Length: 136
Image (cartoon, rainbow, N blue to C red; front, top):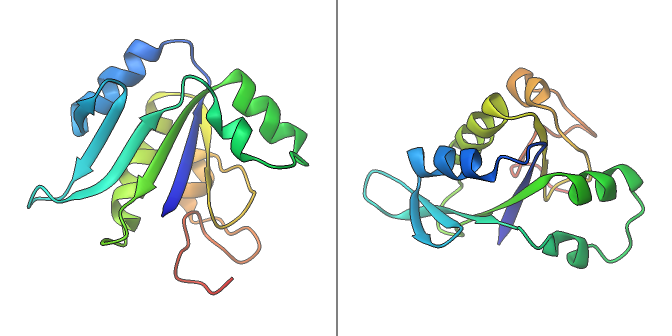
């Protein structure tokens, strides 16, 4: 499963939850699903309050990433294997980062993306944000 992480620099978890509730269905506590028009799940969003992402990183060679994970609210967005999810991921990430200061990271690089870079189509190592169409 492909994943994207959003790191939000805010202690206002209630505001983040309300934002997610505005365009996703809350289906279990701090978990949401983003569906298409046919109500088919495309994105599964988890509020990682326990910072489990730190445990998933075997060797943190990127100290900046480790500090961001420790000091920011972490949202994990998993993309259904039945959908490309590109349009939906971009919508959700842009919505969150336009309302809250923060960053995003995808499975395709270790780069920490700013909203303006995602909006402008900036490339890192020849990849855009969530650029799943490129052979790695």
